[in-house]
Every structure is written in C-alpha cells, then in structure tokens.
Length: 265
Image 1 (cartoon, helix red, strand yellow):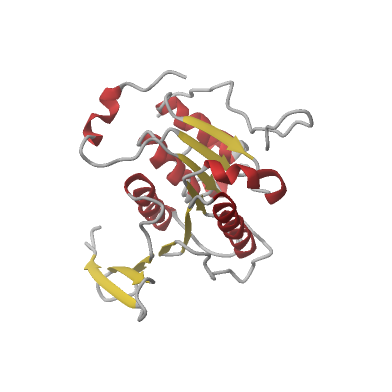
Image 2 (cartoon, rainbow, N blue to C red):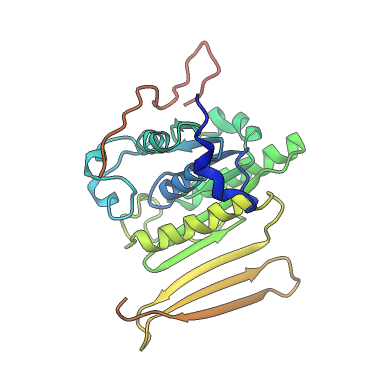
C-alpha cells in the first residue's frame, strides 16, 4: 500500500505522535468509530476494528458516517472510510472479538481499546489482554471507554458500570449522543498517540451538568496510583448560547477464518 503524502503529517513534527503502532479497537459504535477515525487521521500504521453489528438509523446521531451507510457492517464501513482518507493506514475489519479465535492476535497489539456495550464482554477482553501480556512478557496497553447521557468515562482497568438491560446490548435502554462519545474517543486517542502503554494510572470522567443554574462541564480525574485516591475536579461554565463522494474499496471486507489458513474473523 502506498504511503500517505508526508505533507499531511508535517504539523505532527515535534508533537511526539507515535504512528508506528498496531492498535485494536473492539466495538465500533458511537465511541469506537471515532477512536478508529482519530487514529487513522493521525496516521497510525495498523488498526484492527472488531464488530459484527450493522449500522442502523438510530446509530447515525453519533456515528461519523451518513445515511448511505445504514445496513453496512460497522467495522467494514469505517475501514473503507478511513482508507479513503489515508491510503497509508492499514485497517482490517474483523468480527466480534472471540477468545478462541482472536486471543493469539493480542500479542501483535500495542494497545487494545474496548468500547463494547456489555460488562461481561469488557471483562472477558481485559482478562485476555492481561493473560496475553503475562504469557508473552510484553505489556499491552488497555483502555476502556464508555458514554451515556451527558457522561463520558475513560479507564485503564475493567469498569464496573453496567446498564439495567445488560442482556439487551446496543445501548437500547439508555440515551446517548455524539458529545460524550467523541470526548471519550479523544481522551483515548491521546493516550495511544502520545503515551507508552505504561503511562497511565488514572480514570477520566467528563460530565455535563445541564441542570445547574448555568450549565457546567465537570472534568474529574481519579489517580489510582496513590494509596489515598486523589480526585481532581474542575468545573467549566458553558456558554448558554452555546459531502461526500463514496470511496469504495473492494478489498475492505471482514476477515473470515478459513479452515485451511490462519486468517481469523
């Protein structure tokens, strides 16, 4: 695959952006789609996107694609979109993460970013990442992202948050829109692009208090490294006033596992 024009990345110089990485994004919904896009725009060399779901109309309020994408597989659609923007970025769409199929791939990744919609799946993936790190004496960065209502969360250990409809995935039971999704995606992307997998011991939480007399944006950072958990909160007053041609790539398809080769879905 041809490299991208280096002029695209000229303003990266001096920022410490790490492009030579292999990143897995597991869950390509309202958060994972933006994380994949941000990493692709920054020129991260290899991105694997895991998701078997298709785009529906009610995804469009927080998805970086238009109505023509409805009915397409989320991972495939984002892979096509990213590679239409960055030919030098290798994006591989895959099915849902399954330990029996994909665990051997974890050792390839510098980072695994998880934004699935069930607590059970997030814990399973975290356990597999820890296991792969131990078996290969290689630390794999893990980031978990969530968003609902006016709240965004980014953590580096398995979260305990679950919805009342844990068995009914897809965020069907909670309201969510693009704001918290892109906020969580931005924070996660910064860690991947600027930090090493060891450089994290914090939980970041962003909340919009729309019911305050004057709307407030509250940023909370919890430092897990301290024996006594340090919570740093900063409030920001919010201002009260506050095309595209298709670029189909025929070679972007969900990678299917064949009985006689080592490709995995």
